Length: 290
Image (tube, rainbow, N blue to C red):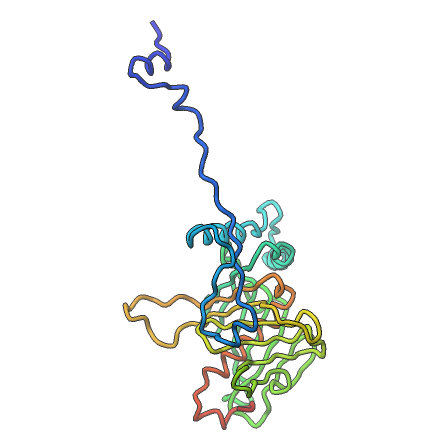
């Protein structure tokens, strides 16, 4: 005699049909998180960002943000055997889907003189950043930024800084300019900013606030208009953690309005960090203005 599964269940007092039915899962709340405005950052750059939406707790916001970022990962069916083609396709797809929210990138050490800017959820390197010595002036160094995971990718831009009578320069979009001509620091105490002006179009000018652990970058949407946030940069800490654990890597978060300017954002952030971390007694020897 053959005993069916339902007969065994009835004998044990278990409703097999009800047990096998899928149970509905909890819904994830939608939370809108707004970055700080330009006026808030200038008025109090050390103030933390607060969400504008009311619903959801911190873990809910983190889950919602993670799901938005993962949706931008290219489908495996569209990946090419050529890594450089994958990088270019991923950059295009990230920019097309940036309206979903900010995208996080992480700086990862690659070798003794290079690091990668990687797309966080997929750990996909998008830019290769390397430092080289000027053979004619060994005390001056050239930082190069290539697309992809190595120096074989397309050269995006470079800048040279160091102890030299040769002035510090930036090369981008096929043009070479003096660093002091495109990057300057505001002297206004109420508006302490780094200003990046690569082109004459004011809507493409970038302004960095550097008075808090997280550095925020803004741009103007129109001439003379209100500035909107385009990126935030969290550099590595200058001192070890108290508990002795490894510090978190440096990160770069790019908002929807900044995706088209990600390369200028990256170059300006690297130059500002180089200036910021140069000791004061050595500034008079450097190839740029204090």
